[in-house]
Length: 386
Image 1 (cartoon, rainbow, N blue to C red):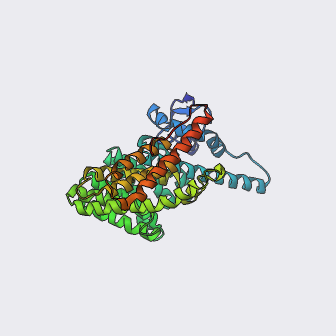
Image 2: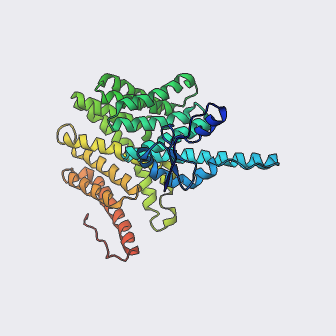
Image 3: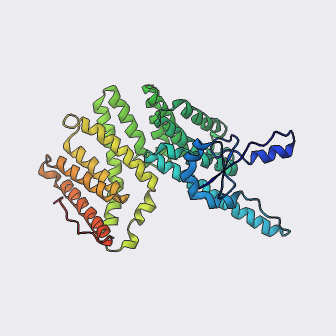
């Protein structure tokens, strides 16, 4: 991706000059764009900082942006022109969806700096396409959450305020899942500011909204339970925290069990492997599950042997191993399953089924790793989990 330096044009107090200058706005902040992409020639940046932030995302969508932003050539045929306008809108909607999902996935992976440009660009597309609607709110909330994790609470507050302005206007039409995202962001900001009681109320409201959108045991409701548990953990109320962490783990165990069963019974038919995952959860959901369960695991391990029992640690290790397997991260999945077996050594015989589940998870990973290494001509992979 190459850049062309564009000098700021002289100011002319005419309507035409104003329209032309509007075309050169920075992709991320809407300031004047002195740097132009040499490939599409329709994307501008105010400076190197925003160019570098958006570089990776823009490389993915540069050719499509050229199509979307290049003026439609004049056609005397109205039907032809209308068809071209419709096709362009469909392409822009695809870009809006792609950048939003990209921002979400990067955020859940913990790549907050890279997620912010994707969320910001998606918000701009959504505002152009749908106006001040829930489509516009969602990417703003992704950007807000990223700034919370980066410790920039003042910027996070600004993004959340923009979303809340829309909520006030459109409160009756907002879906429950969008309201849940808003409460999640408010909770995270209050948590970062150490306003624990306010954060508790926000996460409790998030659970309610997600329960209305899905159900109390849906994996998208689990985040609220996890954050509630974390707050009670900070407060020193370990029994309540443990109960909420266990509930979070239960939700994910019940989610991944049928997925693993179907995916592993189709090992001999590669074309079907992973189809269930696509139907049930997105990659973003997978990343979020890993983030939530990792948070649960870290606090449960700190308390292991007191409130938490070995079976609790075995279950969270299994859920993490299963999610990593579903996400095709086989080495990490195998390591989590092995860690679960270490905890399982302390279990009485009535929990032998959990030892078996973890051992089988190790074998599933061995098969996948063997296939990968065989395709690369590497030596065979032997299991050390038995």
